[in-house]
Length: 512
Image (cartoon, rainbow, N blue to C red):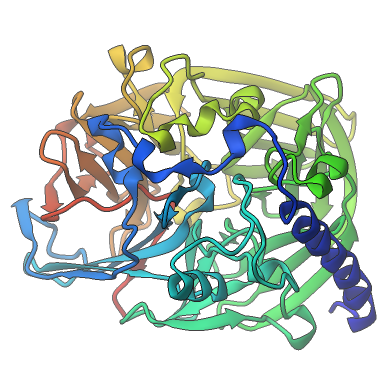
């Protein structure tokens, strides 16, 4: 377990960063145009981008008795929880960065006999409640220069709880990588407040991509003030172990890989320009610097000891999302999706918040990496398809897997001015074969999850479930596929009578 004294020392450094953010944001300064707040009236009318307007009234929604096209599997019962930035402007100001919006958690409930309901509620963080009462932004953001009008005592004062969700031992959490997990009522989605896994871990970041092993053990990390915190949480929801390690030079770490014996973190060559941050010239994201001359480091940690085993180097690159990883002897294989660092840091990545889509967007590619711990050798190759949000069957997390499931770009969508993905695909790694279903030019596809069929044991036997946006009808929907016959199209789609803001990540919780 972590020592309270260690965490108090780290917390002092963390608080100093908060003061730097406050001091910098309080000064009026000219800076990069891409992280200055937008005017709310500037949002355009690109039909693909309408969900990026946000639900800026901050009002929750409930829709019952939803229309189902097709036939839902009778065994499919449970809830698809999803999270993402739901509120993107207040008063006359609009965020410049998609990552800054307040968390909106959705619950798509599949109740059997064709009954489906949808509930969406904003996470009532301290930040949300303060700004909702004030009617304007009061707290600095990750990618938008906002003047601080409230005390910043810890990262939880900036916590948007907007990135992902996790369910452990029946308890639901909204996650944001820079702060605490926020517990929600899994039935009503009402906010219960920040959750600490142990008294000494109160306020310590709990990242947005925890990994659950087949036995129900949950692993995660958090980073702050040059430190890495590791979590091991049992299937019963109790903290089993935690560890504090030094982690210099990593201002942003979004995801990681778990294998049976190791934890692997890829540390891109990012640094933080503290002078720009303190001066108010940049937001946190705007103060990041990517050095293409430096290596990306693969930090391999032994799960048995929670201590570093080896650090290997690979070419400079940036990534957000991993699919899966597995180990065999001293060899680790893993897969992830590459991200263009220039596009992310230059602001092109978020040009859509102004209602415009930049057609020069780079294509994210699936990468396969092999780390040899004995020799230090690293090999890497990529697939040609444009994909994101890779997922595997939850029964093979940390084990050798055959299938990867991703939203994908197909055909003309690789080059035209549309935004987002319009297909879902399954990549068979054993046969090097892609099976896909293309929804067509008028649909934007979000993350899809593999939900195992009750009683099944074969990898990939189950349903692929996710959400999307019908551009022509301006409505959001959920789709359910037979995961072993994706090209046949959805077994069923469930339609909402309105659109929901685009989200990031989700979790399917089977009915008890």
